[in-house]
Length: 171
Image (tube, rainbow, N blue to C red; front, side, top):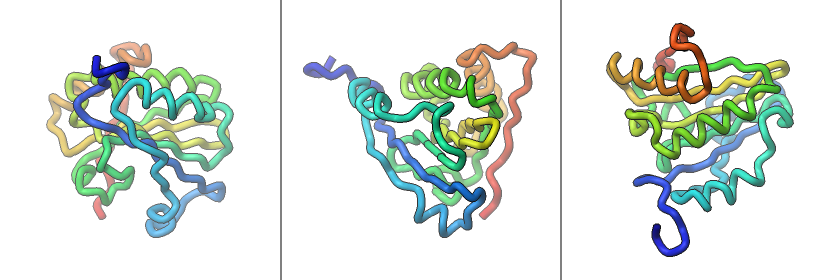
């Protein structure tokens, strides 16, 4: 404990938000449309932001939220994301609240052995589903397997369920 605030981890995180109701954006529109909501490094600070956020099942189509390590922007062009990739989960919107929150808490609580290799989590609201992506730096196969296992354990997927990893597009 530090004073009255519990230390969350050794690194701060930033919440990001964008809204694009008409679908895909150009790189320039995406870059100008994504806004940092604020950063935190304690449990109390996390909850001070999160308690005011609308949950995934209530967000309009086109909303995108992200939680990334501070200093890393949720864009493929960010240096930390270069050469990396992401695991993407497609989830029915009514199930997205619990899964999003479980992954957020596991990530900031560093419950994944390779949490420092995870750049951030990205939520994209679509008409009938939400997609949640776990973005990584450039990592080896052993780290990919470990992160995949953490995802499955965190959200209660069977170990046999495959979670696809895709490299980020080259820019």
